[in-house]
Length: 131
Image (cartoon, rainbow, N blue to C red):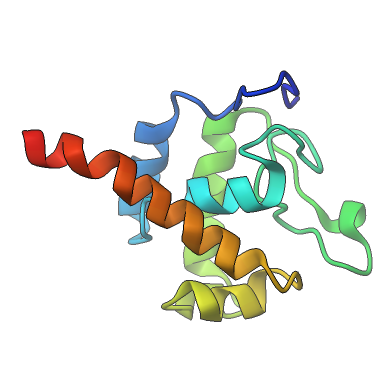
């Protein structure tokens, strides 16, 4: 379900979908894209179909708990809803550093997510101010 063509993200063109879902659940709109980059190179290398976020994967059994969806739109909505309603503390993580301690065991995960979020801000800022 994930296109592995170099340089291509299957999530390309879904920024507005991500943002609408993020605003609906009161989540930073950059987070969905940033986590997808840290977890699957933007959906290129998914653990299961349309799971660009490694949602449900745990170190002890990464494939057993990982979820899959039928479309990117469905996955984006489910990811945001899951983040907002999580019982594991994800919903209350107010910083990427705190989120990193809950979401992923990788020591570089938080820094990767924060860098991508910053890169998104830098790339979109000129368009926002050009108005």
